[in-house]
Length: 220
Image (cartoon, rainbow, N blue to C red; front, side, top):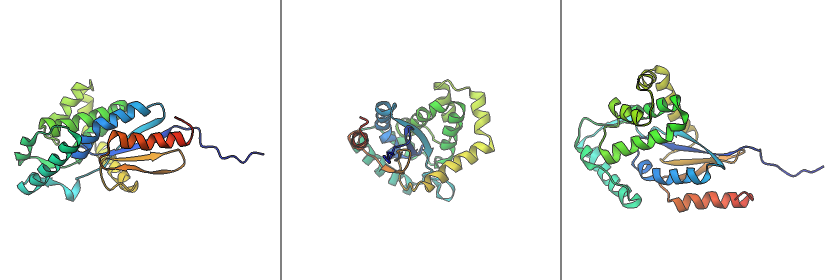
């Protein structure tokens, strides 16, 4: 009788924990898109909204907050080479709040699960590089229109209490996963689960980790 251990015959998975007001997530978006494209046949990718700023942590765009964000954005811009729209930092009516945007992503995901990453990417880009208010429903409606989502259904789902609860469940799930920074990739081989990368990482870094793993199990 063979006692050889066999791994479960299931697809590997990555939980992508990100947030629509996270500058590092914006910087990492093109890299994560390339990772999804390269490993789409080996890995199942799922989005989890992290909740960078919500509840008592929500802040208005005060001068103190925006000065910190300006410094952060310049650092992300330097490393990721992605452009930022700094004028929005002068708008004192904007709130640094994850919940409305995350709720919009959950709404899009409920209508069409295949569009969750695309919706998040467009929301990140709209805020960070086009100066769109990340808390206004009009911002979400524009993205929904671009992605051919039915606007009436989108609005109806967005306003539902259950959508808000689902959003907060995502925030809690990220906490349960042990995620303390964004973006974060949580990798599972079907048996064990652990954090692959936390924070911004280059394509070479993520690809190197995944490539080494799949080569080690003879699957690359």
